Length: 200
Image (cartoon, rainbow, N blue to C red; front, top):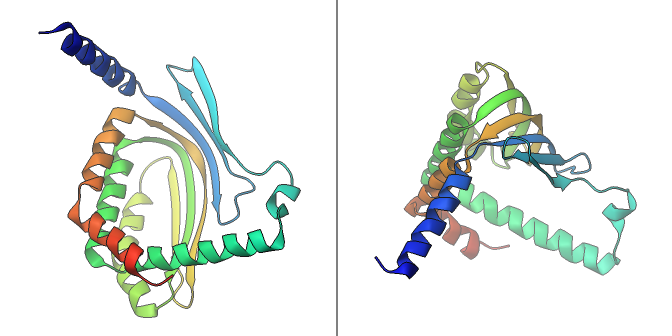
């Protein structure tokens, strides 16, 4: 084996070894109100500590910028939202995403998790079909120790609200494997095409 290939192999093995080290994540999240968001990462058995995400430090940060810039951001956000719903309405896309969420949920070690979600697609029939898949899953997750989950359907309006906090331990290499499988799924790519072609 040539020295170059040997070096590449050594680097890959080193990267895989690092990704196999468990990571502890402490989080406090909310959506769409992000003022209280806080995510911290502890790695290499606590030797490395990083703050990944935090909410605005001051109320002024939420309203900074010109009115035209704010309007552009608002318009872009509304367009993104419409595109996301176009993908979510696809049954195979929903099933694949829910399967990925289930696989990730099984892969992480949870401690004192508290989650509350309200979700609606704007159409009662679409929301009902989504709830038919999400409802049983939320019931199963609610029985997991150290976890309290509440999922509430919104049948009248489009809605996506989330409140959560807790502590989890993950193995990055395992999540990378799941993410690659998700990205290679034909159902996901069909959903991406729907997001791109649907009107904003």
